[in-house]
Length: 309
Ligand code: NCD
Image 1 (spheres, rainbow, N blue to C red):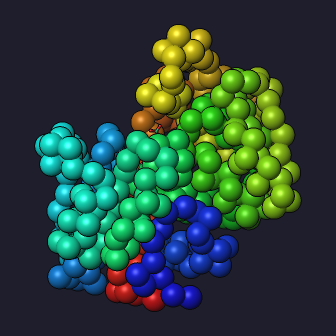
Image 2: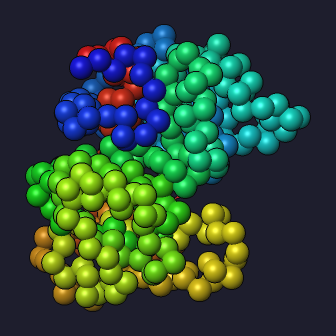
Image 3: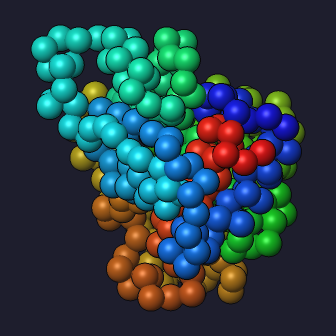
């Protein structure tokens, strides 16, 4: 298995064995991620973090991951403060950034932008989210969380809930869960259901999939409820957003009707999708999930930078 120098643009770039290897490496990173052990595995390496879209967890956990491993970070979180404001192209921005660093993590509103950047750059490009396209590192930490919380990935029935049309995390996760042969139920209002091409791909991989609109009915027998935010910024018409905002809310009443050991996950940020009363319950896995971004991104950075095999 060789990760050194590779781009991580889509979860589809990785095989099942490669994904499991990343998760195993991430397991070993936990004490360093918590600050309990020190490491200088990536000493002397520089990660450029280029965020053209808002981010809290992805950017901060990538930066924390790099620093916990002794590496350095350059970059921006506000593209308005860069020469793109003067009209510089994404291609030129990438060509410049790559001459200052060993790996680039980027987030951009345009689908396909990370793939394009990977064509220009000779350093590895890690996609931190490209529009409504993909979010492979979120997907890896989601799989890590499912495995850690439930003991396996494939032996679960997973409900993907909310904005399945524009949500990039669920596009990546549906594909990965299909790879692990997990059963899935897609719960969304009709107009926000999973794109047909994602459904077709998952079905072709032999994944059992069902579709629902009613949250309460559909979550009674699932092991994992993965909730997503309605992606307001990707709606062409704000009126359409107003029709669906707040449509699903996970609360104690709904969870009380489900399996005793069901867990609730969310890539965050949440807006209206999970009632705060759930936060202190055994069901809530979403803050542990957010922490898991650090060991998983440490594993990925170490592998693509050749700090580890
Ligand atoms: C998600 C994203 O940016 O796609 N957040 C994240 O990376 N944890 C989810 C979202 O914005 O709704």
